[in-house]
Length: 212
Image (cartoon, one colour):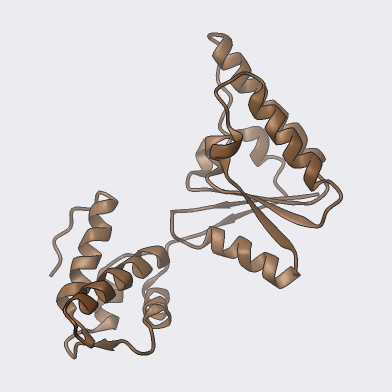
């Protein structure tokens, strides 16, 4: 098998990259919904994961675990029975992933939260950085729909330089500004609506920054 860790801030393209790998290699990508796997009952998580890996055995699938640190977290010192069984879950996962013959991709916003036993066994660890100014400008140009008209005072180069946004942030800003434009029954996306959208993205991430 082959094990890969994608790590980096939210919205930088980890899930998109996993999907594109599937498209490029013409293989099915199965995104594992951890909320459907993790159970508060002792032994249930291992049972569900066992079914998953048994089903994926000998099939040419890509298994993609998003937000993997929630289930592949660091083992802790055993203080009670809960810690003991939580550590057993991590050990079981380590065993199954290592023995799985296919490609397994784990994605995490926080590499430091992944148990060291997992990180030592990754064949490849890939960091996803926030886009730089030129990449942000390209993302703005790519995501703005061809039919969209921008207010003449909108300067995408300046917006790209001033506001440190991810690809996901930029999509959200464009969707917000587009809906505001439709509500006004206008054909032109205003600078004001774009800035409001950027402000909303900053606020969601706790960045209380005054927009100029």
